[in-house]
Length: 304
Image (tube, rainbow, N blue to C red; front, side):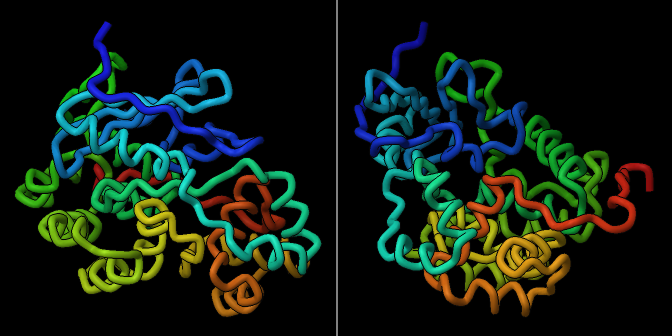
């Protein structure tokens, strides 16, 4: 068995839940770049120092971080952030206590932490594919793209693939993505972001990353929020323009079956600084507004 190149023991807080905290880093159970297997979280990444795989596993009250590949030291040094252990909940308890629903969810999911990968483009890849399509369509496009550009990730967990090299994505013509169910609009947005990947990875914080991302044609506020919530662990990032989240927030916080972005932001305003965290808690609880009308149909742009 391949031995890790770097290792570190972390001390999570009491009640910490690894799977719940890192689940946003996986697109599905079958994500080719990240997965949870036998209680261990495996995460493949292109780090500033090279390809790497991070393994996080509970061990006797600790969280053992092991790194493989040229970027092993980088992922192990950042393992606490990836696990959500740098998540700053300062001030949230008081804000949560002011609303009965949020207070209950904060207590029920006290072991949930928000991860911060420190890597932007890998999340851009997923977020662009999620624009205005169903989750199933988005996952198919994401998985097919990863496999098309795929390189095996370091370490013993196979098959695990690295996220695509942004240089290769930027150089690919838009029609490469068409068989994956990605129309030219999203393909071009992804290719533009890939061309800017080096600058995006150097952003100092979520605010700078949001400015740079939204300056790229085809990337708006929704996509930027989806990216910075994970890349920087931004607890205030709200996905304005989402199909479901405004209704979920309106239903959970005000008992209203439907809400638009303006209503959502008004209801979340008392939690400023942690507005995104409230949305994360609602998702963790599985809160859904009542459904009216048919579901969005599955489509395949590859047939057009």
